[in-house]
Length: 364
Image 1 (tube, one colour):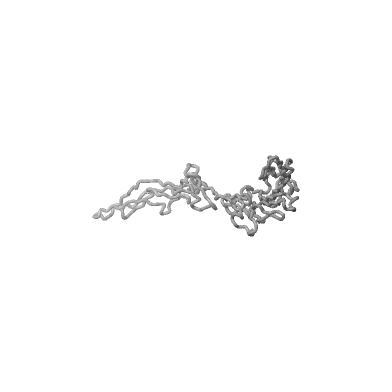
Image 2: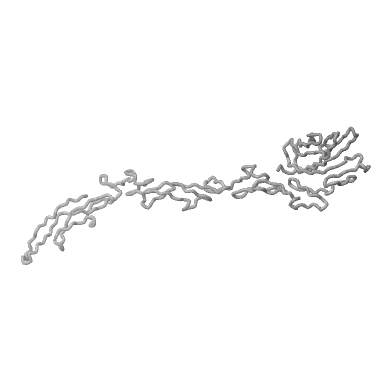
């Protein structure tokens, strides 16, 4: 309650001791009291003396000769009561969010932000440098962050942790032979007899050239796709006589050679498993050409399953054609015969090219 302010009216009282001529005042208006030291009326602080009538939710404020009842900061007077001021509804005090409280308010920021020292503005939180929330790579964004994984990994469902990518399961073409998954990567391996070229391809190891075979001195090492074989250095058997490294001859002067081919030439070759067909794989050709002769080529043996076909390409040559895919590892011995006939001289001779075909175990 606001007291009524009056100016002090002093009522004089004349002392009987006229010699001192001292004037004393003893009565003051409401809100004041006599100060005998200063010899004047002084204001009464009702807020200190407790003589005010402010409500408990109000603040007493002293005034000269009176007092007034005010509401605390953050409150406003409505009638005789003090009610809270909702600062958040009055003005945009905060950068992001304002939260009203009794007699005050405070500011809040969106997730990914924090209050600046002025308690009003919101600044981005660099989660990557403050808390390391990601399992591998963290990239800060305004108000947030994203996690990424190193090559060979992918984000798990929680978008924080990283899981290994099984590259071997996602594709069957990564490796030529076999894919081995490893944490964050994969590697290719090759079967026995092969070596890795680059990172994915397999190449046959030539054991004969690298001297990693176990063939005896009286044998010949011959390499094929995926391995090697040891063949006799001298393939000739009686009644044949070795004329060169791979050529055996049965001389006509030997009675045992009468019904035998004149010569047998040994050849070796290797093809990959499941080779595409039809495919020309070997050419046989007469080494000696005589006039007035006719050469005939045929497969004499080794084609019981009909895997091959011999196609004449000229009067002195023929091509062996693979007409059915072969699966290895397997060895085929095919005798290709050339019959030479001279009708003018009543001459007939035959020769054999004994072709050993080794089918490798893999299509590479």
